[in-house]
Length: 437
Image (cartoon, rainbow, N blue to C red; front, side, top):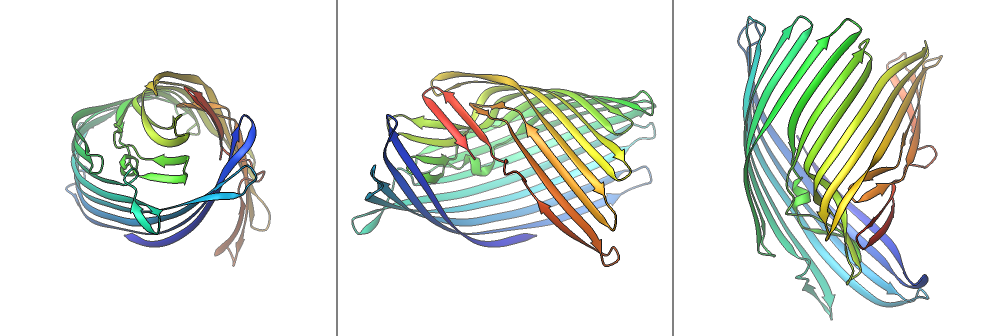
């Protein structure tokens, strides 16, 4: 499988600069961004079944190669308080991206006559990335390398993992216990900055679950697990993505993986209504933050590890059959979130309650018509250093069967009231920032 893609974007932005409440100048940025990307993945797999009991062996070998190149051609025009241009600053960059992934895995399932089911497996992956980002300024009559922004970053990651799992059903009770071990070796090399991040760690990830069927109407479950979430290869790449000279995004090669303990108690009624209460505790929680340089008046967004993140969540979802031609589905979620970290010379302690509500309605109409109306509401919520405002959105769709039910014509309208905009703010350390997307 794979794809080839050529693309080109023309991006423009405007910034107004105020001093003591009065317009004192501004920026106009025009960016022409062509790019090309390709990705091909090859898979070889094997599967064998040994007997009627369900003994089975499966194996996979995968190779994936991702190659891309994007170019930025920015021209920043500086304006005075009257909107008159007094200076221009051309900047261009080339961002090549190469990701090479080789992975092997094998899994074995062995049911026993006693009802005990044993599973085990191994996996190994080898990842290499190479990103040589170059920025150039136009000075005089020629392009000159911008050494402050140029960065050559290489990353290698090797992971070896193995797991074992056992499960058993006893009439109304079901049990499962598993353990996975992962040994990780990674080296991030920022050639330009002469910085190497070398990590090696062995981690264990247990999982336990228990199910109990009280009756045909009521089933209960209790689950515990520990998991790892690694930063993406792009997040580790310290390249710079410019919006304008004062606002940009940048990768973070010093990101750590995130580890989460999770426990959940669940209840199912009539195989339809699901209710759950869960608690998650994450260490080195990965989230996006903004960092402000008061001297240069620049602000950039990057991913960062917060010390701890706690989340208590209650969730209920259920179908609601209103009539023969009207079926509704409702989902209600309530959370208490807490973030803690030492960040930018200050202590972050951001916490609060939040909730969201989702409702979908499906209508079966005469003459082969079907309609759907759905919507959701998100209350204000904390997210790292940010506080998000409330938001809501509604969608509508209509379809009709044609050609004696051999075909379907659909029309959909997303975000009917044009309210799907994220608004938030942070008032942390010296930052006073408002965002409207």
